[in-house]
Length: 378
Ligand SMILES: Nc1ncnc2c1ncn2[C@@H]1O[C@H](COP(=O)(O)OP(=O)(O)O)[C@@H](O)[C@H]1O
Ligand SMILES: [Mg+2]
Image (tube, rainbow, N blue to C red; front, side, top):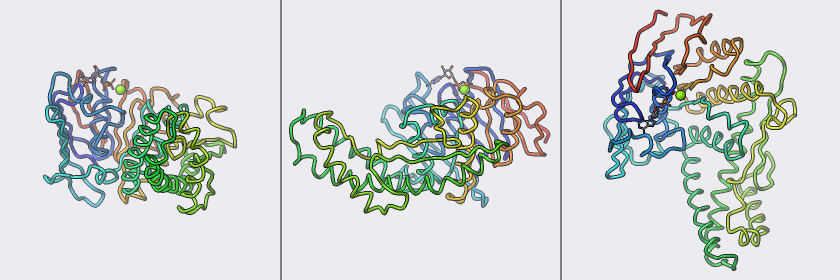
């Protein structure tokens, strides 16, 4: 997949910005705070129907404005063109997504159509942060490769919210009657999600092993271990997962009343990363964290490429500023071979000595939400 062009209106600090992108390498250059990340955010918005930050639609709308719009032409690997348009109307609180002029009714159907991999400073929390950060990472990968997972996740969140409301209104008293239908739902949807995550992490393992090997010369073995909130085996069936949730739910009944919240289910899952058998979070150096994260993202790229049958676009937000020259060069030479990439940076120095192998490139100077673009010689 490729993004041929994008037209942003009233999106963050972009009043009206038009991009004609190169089919391979796009560099967004500019000082801090000028609107580079905002431009990548708009591109991810096209692919995910929302921001990759936890922001609402109203926050990405330019201040003092009542709407925003992103228009773009995307081209699939097979050469099919898609005119995509997103508009948000803050007065009606209405978001519209159209593809080739036709309204998309259910936004979840778009996820995975235009696969995207994002590597941004925020992602540091995937290896450094809480279990929720790791769940968010795998959720985004699985969601782009499985429509049912997106829908199950939306439904599951609703179920947990409902259960939590019932538990908090019960104020510690028995609420078996009210909660019982929600228990059934939690078991059904929770099992689907845990089963899918289990399957995904097993399938993802060889991808991360391979990319790690590509990035790191010495032999370090990365591992991803799934610790769901209920006991399952790697080959558990979905029925077995359901039974495990049901059993634990019954066991935790009193605790749930006491803490007034849902204590069992995939929203309590943990994912552990390790290198040579040592937990990344506890033992790894900064450099190992960074390398692991990049390996995860490149693995995500290859995984999605295969599962979606479409080459993802790769957004690299301020990635190279934190890396030493040697590592930067290695990562750059790896990512430039992937597909269409978008790199933001404050300094072109990071590209010194980069061999672009004749790839089509464009450079955009971003200043105060505006851009000047320039075609570069290959
Ligand atoms: N909703 C918004 N409306 C107008 N300006 C915004 C909005 N959200 C963020 N900004 C502005 O965007 C700028 C940051 O842009 P960003 O893309 O993060 O910069 P960078 O080029 O460093 O990546 C800041 O000046 C911020 O005030
Ligand atoms: Mg930025």
